Image (cartoon, rainbow over all chains, first blue to last red; front, side):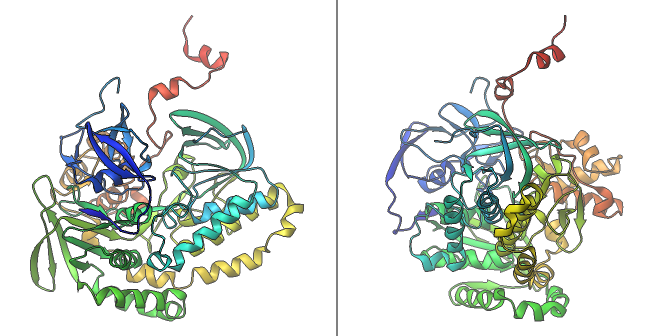
Length: 98
Length: 472
């Protein structure tokens, strides 16, 4: 869906998406890294389980909700990636204790 | 690393580090006022100057000169004594000018003598059939990824809608080597005539030549279909195609990515939750705060600058930021105001920056069918409520957006009405034969962004706080 421009010279950052290592770039918001990864990053909604991807990328739509380092319901578009970050695609509601 | 604000009290707290907030905070700090700038994003710039300090798009001509203006604003801010905290989500502001802000999963509280809200705008909802499908995004979303991560569309890409941002985005995608298959222009034909009386101001504004050359640049490379009157997205769990009607011809084209845009509207949540009076703007078709010439709102001590004060664009936002900050300096440290630009100068700057705006608002006024959906088109993305659900609720007695919450939970999901509020107001107004002003808007309350109960529970409590809720 998206590709990286060749002029992007930022250092790589390794993140894990459901356990799979993904090369992101320093400063990428989590959601951008997911959309650039080519992986199926669709979450599913809490209400009907419908698949969704980020819509606004600016913190207002909450369609980028994702589990980051064990914490659910994070807005992936507002959180920059860090090396070793563990991301889980959130299916449905946030789980208790996550 | 983001850290909590250093102090508990400030002369001025500015919320939002876009064009208005950057200018306001720098002006206030330069005049010697203790100034705190709180911003939700990882770096300064807001949306229009998104990633201004970190963008990997280093070829300056690709993002354009208007973007790089933001670098000067950031430089002025950094040269000032203003304290800046990023990744700080303000979740409460009240009439006492007490502010609650979530930083790194913990809440901090600060008190201000003056607050300048610079929370900007968000894209107007574009509730067409299929707009919740993965692969449908806003044009602004694509632009955010382009600026912050140098990402461009490379699948089959359709851009649909209207307004200056749409053309700017298309030009930027092409300059960075991205793919656009088709642009569907939804500008209503009648708008051209309606806008004509305002054309002189526009033609003599800086928007005109820039806009024209950008459209020419895009049209040389992409097929543009104008006069689009119907639009829908479809696919099974993922966008597969886009259908549209132009003239009397219906066409369906395969697509991996659909980028929607029909203008921006003020992001009202924090201002409304603070109790600031807003009114329906019949030209811009949104809620705008009631403000005096200095941006002061109906709540004493709170001013609003930038697009949150009514859409005026980035240049106007910068000037409004300076005006609001000067207003704060006049109130708190009148002697220091002497070294700031005179209010009369700022007002002249503002008039220049706002030139041509009425033309744009009239020309790009979105058509009713793209604002007021029908049938099983989703209105509330969070709670998955359709237009028919809303109309059914009206039929059995729901009178306005707040009653509708009890019927259907619209606006009660995590986005708190940001993506459905305008649609619900207009849909209910139409169904009930009332004006949007009569129908009203969601009653917004803190926390204006979701925070966890654990975060609330960890807030320091006084003995009297505990006594107020504990029995015996």
